[in-house]
Length: 436
Image (cartoon, rainbow, N blue to C red; front, side, top):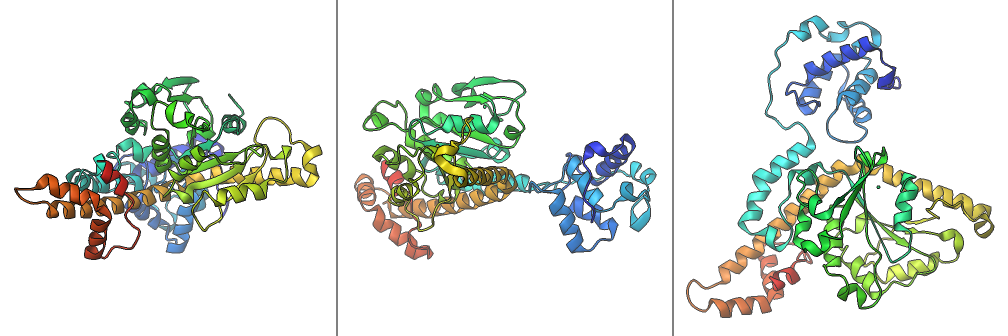
């Protein structure tokens, strides 16, 4: 198969023909080709199933689960379709004149993976969550913006580890993509239905007054949203001087983000108790964590010390990926790093950028993974709530029984585990239920 030409290289006549084919294939008129639409249309090319699968994989490089107009052109060019070889009726393709007069039948079927997840959630999972008040105990209801949101990357670290500078270095500018450069206050963002931040209202006005969304036109920000967090304070300041639940906010964002970057400074490798608590709040999202050793050209022999410190905090047998480099606008200090170190930093930066570029391609898989995790958590929650309700008396002694159940939650969890044959260690919400 030949390499597809970019859309800009097509003539106006070719684009017009492609648009006609696209309108014909798009039976439900939603501006994208999915599932049955694509199968029925590309079957006319008489290509084998493996070849059609390859065409789809190349065209849908971002793994969105559907083809827009640009992706459709790529598929047609890979497919050696009618515009490529100039023969519109070859290999079973219908003439353009016939296609224009065909009345398309509107389909009510699912048109993309994300649409399918929305339907599954609203019709199947959300009623279960509402019945057992999953939204009060574990996580608020999901909204349409939670499914449609761009992938997010969160940066965490102690003070002066270079989090904001890292973002500026990537964007080459001083941050969410928008038609113009502006900042939106947190209280406004939290009520914006098109943004996935409505759940932050649970953390109160003190947090929202310190939260804001910065927008600017940038090609990278069209696909990824960066979450810049404040540096973790030392000592009691972390708990007493912040007027909101910092670890709770971090945990909320960790569940939403596709990638979590832990930034470390070679001069501040000691992980404070406060930062340990923050890292502990990431539990359950270990697969998203990457470690960045920033400003590494200033001090080379710190990798082992960092891994030693992380080993006592990250309770996982797998080794986290550590990127070593100096992610700022200044050139690498070659005198300190040496030619080998400079080459290493450049390779590490390229690896990190490839990891970031790969995020949109994996976004659909991540959405499915998070949906399955939520469905499993909702099912476990329903088991627990129904068991506790069954243990409550019908008339007398409700308060006494409630106290006994709450004081012996671990025992009740074991009963639920045996009754429904659940795997060991699956209950993670005992503290949440106890506080509630």
